[in-house]
View 1: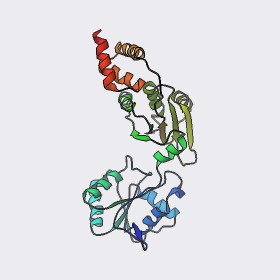
View 2: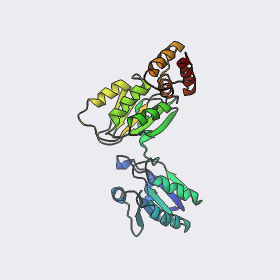
View 3: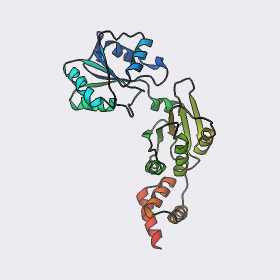
View 4: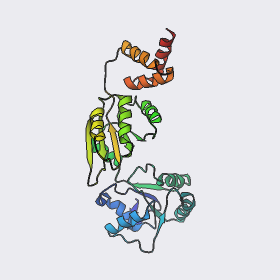
Length: 286
């Protein structure tokens, strides 16, 4: 039991903070914040504000700043506290599963020391977006952030083309338009997508439709703000003949090397890249 008689068990407790509304925090998370011997957070100001909202006093406990710039210095302090039998609450800065969050390195370091790590489940932009997207939820693949450069992003997207499930991406307001454009180039304009903006916050929006429809809706905006979660529906079922593949390959081979052409056409038709590459080699020899 992680909480017994008001005492928090020894170990690192990952507390999922709200991604918008402060009331989205769980009762168990509040118990951990109230009872842990030591608290650590990427942004201590946010943690203090959250505790104030819920009437939790810090008292004489320490609240350590733990972030990418001081992790090497602070991690040993946290591990030493755990080894001495303390309970430590790490407050993730924006929900879980701690994507691009310093808590990831902390949890790995604690595990490497053979010390217990617990999770207090809570807010997650991935799951919130999936729930409101209208896309299939029985299987999904979380792809995180795509590369910032278009060429690398297209290669990254093409490598995911064969995954037969809903896919979820994080994206910034600066790149959401170009990322959707690249998805159209790689996956086709008709693939279903839901783009979620500012989830759980005052100006939450969800754009649903085909890639081309949603791209047009967002591109026409005068200003684009907030954090985005892109939920891409599974690949479309399609009847593909060998002549369709050959014609597409021949067109691609006019402007690309064999490998690049194979990657693009395999992604376009959601077919194995090795199979398309072998066919491209045959066509180049004819």
